[in-house]
Image (tube, rainbow, N blue to C red; front, side, top):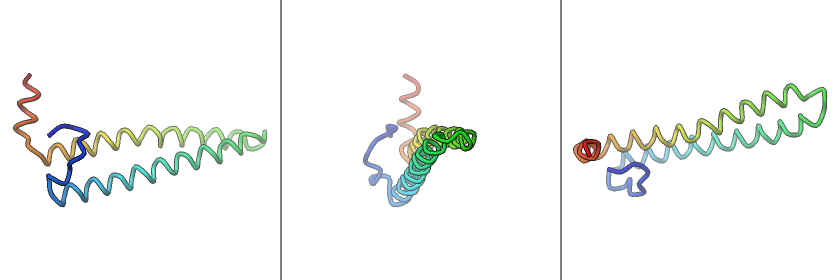
Length: 93
């Protein structure tokens, strides 16, 4: 099984549930990152709130970094659910 393929349905209902769970986690992560960036931007306008706004930027940046890591983790888990012999042969090339 290739990584980042779209036909997870061929792997069965467990793969579909796993894919859906990761999609929810990715959406929540991206949404929280965006909200923290917006709030941080507003807080950055005031000198009194600048430090707190900086922390929100940092947390938002970390959340944006978590998203691609979650995608790779999801794809590796889905790949392990598929045809391992094909993956092993591809690695030998």
